[in-house]
Length: 151
Image 1: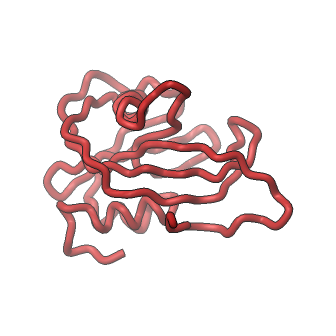
Image 2: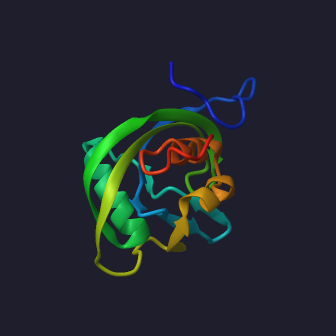
Image 3: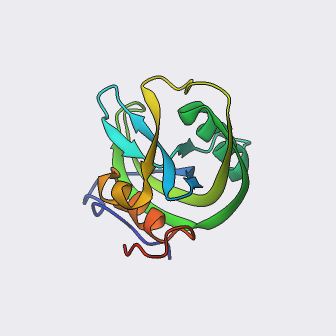
């Protein structure tokens, strides 16, 4: 069973399953995050939906680049969590299955190409309580670079 973070599913609401790949990207005590503006106003682990025909690792590389402008390497899976949410950009309710990876940022190619996204380096311990969803916070707290932080 995959642990749920956030709100419980609403009675009577139908949810579409949406798989996504997300990354914890450390550099020393800092971590690379994305700020999604445009009405969302959320600090997040970089990542997003896995497109049809795409593997989770392909999606991870694509999404991190789109949201941060960085390339990554040595991704290894940490685990997964799920959350139930409304996705206004798709006008649908989703059960998001979030596959989280620990990876290394390699090189900044340029600014994020995803609209309304800004790449942010932040101290990992400071970021944990600021992340938009509890699943992101829990995985960042247990990342190998930050064992001193409790979820």
